[in-house]
Image (cartoon, rainbow, N blue to C red):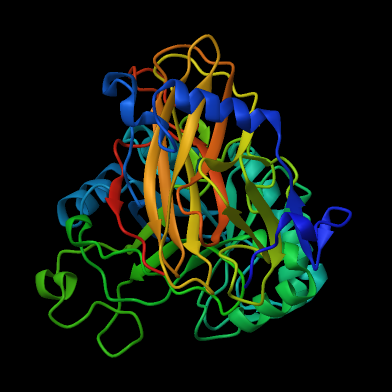
Length: 463
């Protein structure tokens, strides 16, 4: 899709695209970058001892889920056969409901909880009223268990479940009125979930903001050290796929069992768990609270350009896209610049202390009309009496790629500024699904909101 030039601006909207204009805030960011002697990659000349830069494409966590309770012996058998999980999927309420003792045990081992919900049953998930009732029951169970606000609750939709668009809408609407985040586990290929979900999204695009845990495809269970690249199958419409069940126990011949000759089938030592992967941006329940994204305003550009500002000769527009074109939701940003430096950024009043780590990530690609890669970088600044930054360069192609930049503060800061810098002057950069995630306290103190068992496994995410 062609980009939108400044001359096309008309009452903030142009052919369905919102356009942002230059703002002094980003100019300050550019000045800060130049103060470090850098053009569009501010940390290249910064003393490396002041930064903890993660030159990664994406971070993926490895975990398991099970209907069986978390016990010391169960964790031991999982660790011996498969490895120690970064997260453990367990259920709210019902016959498989987790207990506070399980949660405390998981936290004592540095394991996050991926919260699942099947308390109201999975067979009949039809009608708006049942969606409302299911979400209300999940919220009540979460509050009783002590799940903190900001955690995603994944509604379990099995391949055999009957589900319709009204249920999806009722569940999302009711969950959105709570302090928790709506999410679904399901099969996007077989069963009724995909059609119900996509019809709900077509009716109300805001439903695409719900997180999704995919059960397809399934190469089969295996240990942490043999985990595949994150290749979860998404629904055939806009979605926020953040987790993937890539293997489950079963007999050979069924769909998704332990594969003949595979690790679990060959060794016979794997316990009763599904093996999973999840992006580190998933809002888990952790010891320090929810691993919820930070304070970026309209990080998915669904509301337009509000909260984001531009610098240099940069044009920034938000476009409606057909199903499957945005990475998340129904809109994505298109950014272009006629000269370097060019940038868009967002400034947030997020105070930081020495030792605190933050990660800024965003999905990028060169626009589908472009024939050459788009080069740029993403930067996260800490501003105050001193300026620090973390940066990661990227070379975007025609498929969505998640790029992350991280820094650990060595001095107090009064605010954070997340920026996307443009090194290519001929072309269009698409961006979507930005996130700011607080990280683990590097001083070894109490874990922050993204507390976990240690460094995440770094892998490439293919889409």
